[in-house]
Length: 219
Image (tube, rainbow, N blue to C red; front, side, top):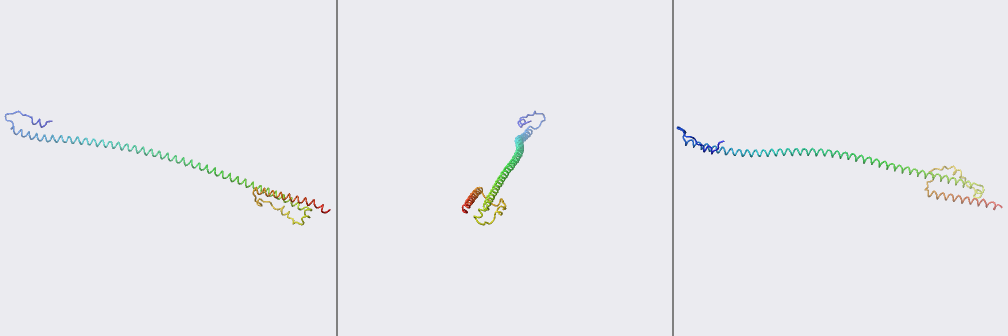
């Protein structure tokens, strides 16, 4: 490619009827000036093109980096979502297992508590039945003692010594002995039984004394 210097230094051979040298030089000077302007503009355009190309490469690199960043972000988001789903499933299974364990434990505790309450009820029923049986036996024993004492009082010697006494032995003998006749605690039951036995012994002793004293009085 020709340069302005090449055009300026160009020399032509002289001919017999050649061009006017001054006009050629003037024209060449104009060409040189225009060529210099064009060359300067060409250099400037090349520099601008190189700059734009560099900017374009930077933009392309930025776009690539952005795409890579978006791709990494998408992968990270997918991984986070996947891990979150796995964690949620683990929590659900763990919670379900814990609920089942608590329900089973509660059912076992309730069953044990219910069985303990039933055992207490059975024990209370057994104690109540035992107390009722003891009361019944005590009443039967009292009835037997009273019947014995009434038989003693019904003897001729005692009847003569005490005078006429209304006959209530049949009413006492035939009176039904029920569990609801007397309700007594074991301590009061033992004390009353002792008192009855003591009173029976006193009456028996008095009867013997009266029986023994009657012949002596008659003589």
